[in-house]
Every structure is written in structure tokens, then in C-alpha cells.
Image (cartoon, rainbow, N blue to C red; front, side):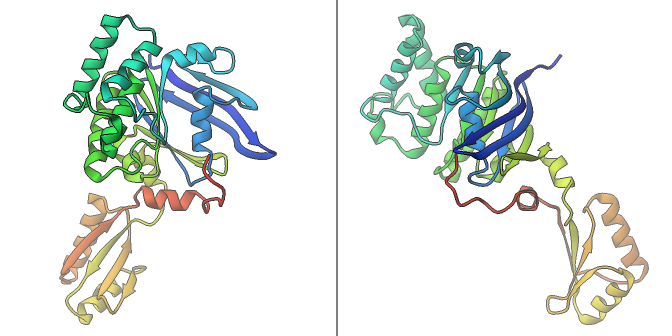
Length: 313
């Protein structure tokens, strides 16, 4: 039986009379990646801060790793790891010293701690740089070290708050591989990100938060299917063929300058086959065909309002 690593019921939080979270319900299954999306100021970081016991909440219930966040904060802290938007790496220490410090803070026996440090340095491709001050690390190396420090305590639930912000595409993809490896090992990842492609790549389920409310939740495919706007775009060699196709395909949007028709549809194989069969029966030749299905960008803009002017919390 699959159990919830994170469960929220009616979670509420206000700051200075402003409602930031307005009755949030969530279930995150163990051993999965869950991504929380939303514009700046939507409340994503507030959710992470509450679930990691950094701040309290005003109403509802929150459980992490089977523990009540309000009543059992110590048990929650023992079960989780947190990698925030800003690196927790100490620049004056070497990579190895940062990890050893975390092992000591977790009260690991010396031999066990040193063994875990060596394993994490190797796992995150930091062995060669282990003796260098963290101040000399690149952005990608610092983010890998930051996540490695989170793993010293062997958490079963990890909160990643915009973990790849500022990384180049190579560094981002390396971090993605690390995250996939953690989930394959049974770790639960709660991810907030500004990169919609990141959520699409990694998340088993995605929720959209806007103005303190959840406005949608599901797999990436489920969210995309719920948004109108899918279409097939046909380009023709001349106006005569465009005219003929427009007569056959009623309801299509026409662009005379580009010699194209935009036909509503999901772009699936049955829809494409039907479309092409109709054109073939009427002797109409298509020069080019492309399919557009809504992506997470479309979902995001369709379901969330304008970003607030306040700083993200």
C-alpha cells in the first residue's frame, strides 16, 4: 500500500493580515517527485518553510514522514533535508570540511561520518575538489555540494526550493540526474521551481499555486489535456490550395500571408489521420504539417493570474 510522505489538509497561513495560504490540501506519495509551481509571491516558499518546521501555520493539518509538523517538529526534522534557494555552503571551509561539519552536527560516529562524506564526494563528482575552499567552486559545484550536505543525515523526504536557479543547462541536467537517482532509491522529493521544463522532466505530479490557493493538480499530461489550444498547422504552396483546404476544413483559422491554416485538435494520431484523409479525398496537397499541443507554459498562464508585485515568500 502506497503511503503519503507529505499530507496537508486545509493549511492556512497569513502574514500581517494578508492570507498567503488559503486552505491547501495535498498528498505526496512516498518515493516520488512532487513539484509545486506558481508565480512569485504565490506562497511556494512559505509551504516549504512550514513543512520544514521553520515557521508555524495558522490552521489546518500538516504531516511529513508520518509526523505531525506542529506536534512533532523534532521527528519531522530528523526525517527531512532542505536545500533552499540560497546555498548553505560555508565558503571558508573546503568541500570535505563542509560535509564533515554536517556529519558532526548529525552526531554520526567518526568512522561512519567520514565514510558517508567520502561516498557523497564521489557520488556528486566532487572528490577532486574536496580539498579546495568552497569559495573556489563554480555555481554548479556549489549546488551539488549543498545537496550533498543535505544528504549527510540520510533524509527520506527532501525539500528542494528552486535548486537549479542560476545553473547553466549542463549543470541543471546534472542536478536532474542526481534527483532522479535519489527518487529511484526511495527518497521523496518536494520541488519548487521557476523552470516549467524542470517540473515536466522530473515531477510525477504537479500542483499550481496561485494567490494562496491550489488551482490545479495532476500529472503533466493531465494538466496539459485540461487546457484548450491544441491545433494542427498546415502550410500550402499557393493560395489556390489554401482556398480549397479552407473550404474543406470549416472552422480553421486562416493566415493568407503565411499560406497556413490552423485546425483545432489534440494532434493525436486519430485526429491527424482524419485530417489528412479529408484533404487526400479532395485532392489537396499539403506542403508542411506541424502539431502544437499545450505545454506547461500554456497551463501556467491559463491557470495562474498575474504575478504579485510582492517578493516571493
